[in-house]
Image 1 (cartoon, one colour):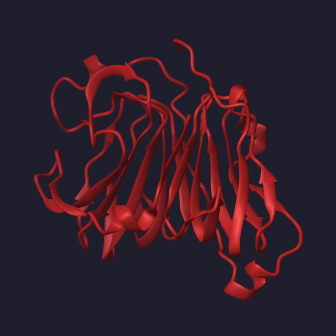
Image 2: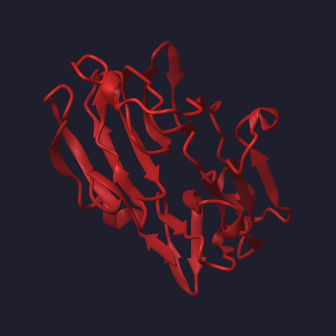
Length: 252
């Protein structure tokens, strides 16, 4: 199945939410599925956006599900590492990270999971977190800042650019993350969904055309493993998109 959500619809439906760790009020909305869940895995992707306050801190924690996390706006720090647009994080299930500290202009992140599962944050500052840990590769990778093209350079691009965002030599499974850059109305055959646990496409610049329907900035698509293929088509001004593929996980 193909899941698609217009990014502007998500941004226009931001609501006040309370951080479960700090009790601080910030803003959030969902692309797919519930915001958090304590259930066993169920079908369908889960993706949410959080808009942090200026100088807000999210305490160190982990989730019971694997996720990608996009930082498209604002600035801050993850532990000692600077975070700025556009950056991408990959985190295995039960791999702790943080603290995440927003800068003076706030920080936006979009969390992407291939399924709805035990995704509620487990904070290292609260008792009982060790009992909830499970075996995992414990990867917690943050990309370098990813530059975006100017509008004319993107629109009039004639060649496909498929740029890996993580060190390929460190990847031993189906995990992959790339920046795709294609010009006006160009086509690109996406990865074979059956060779992974599914993948997301995030519109970082330009727009995505799905059967004549245009998906603008910050739109999101999830391609499930039951699909045979997915053709990525740029809108009239071209497309720069993050393509993020989940590994096939076993009981590690």
